Amino acid sequence: MTLETSQLAPGLLLAMPQLVDPHFARSVVLMVEHGDEGSFGLVINQPSDVRASTLLSSLDMQWRGGADARVWAGGPVAPSTGWVLHEPIALAGGGTVEIAPGIALSTSPDRLRRIGAAPPGRIRLLLGCAGWGPGQLTAEMARGAWMHAAADPDLVFDTPAEQMWEAALRSVGASPDRLGQTSGVN
Image (cartoon, helix red, strand yellow):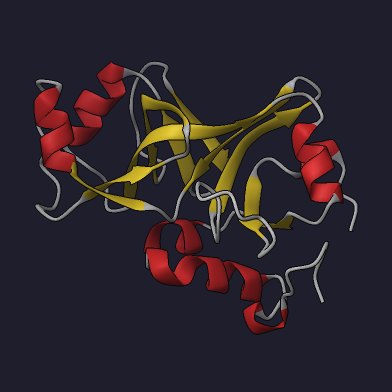
């Protein structure tokens, strides 16, 4: 399947079995940007052992969300860079963009502070991101390393991490047990 450049973001990339890089094996990546100058996304199905409260406390910020809320590994690039995915909420000023219906991205420390003090119901704190240089992602897709799916907020926020990859594959009509470790989908 060939996708136009503009169709990859926003969207989800689903790692195919032949993608054995440990950072991306069975990963689901929320694509934020894709263009001639490169691509940027956030891995959304890799929870870490770090609690949200611990991370925000280390930044002298409050976390008033659930005590068990985790930080997620957003990818291997810039692992100390923070990102906040959340349902769209009313916040004055800049620093937040709606990247797909029902999915917003906040990037500034001020936004993190405000969101941490009053987190919305659907939220994911991430450290790190995924990035590709010019033409790199297109080449990987041509080799069958990734499958594309629509960015669905229910899948992003409500599906357990260990079920997300299979659920995303099923959302495009693919059966996880029918995927081969070849250069594409069987």
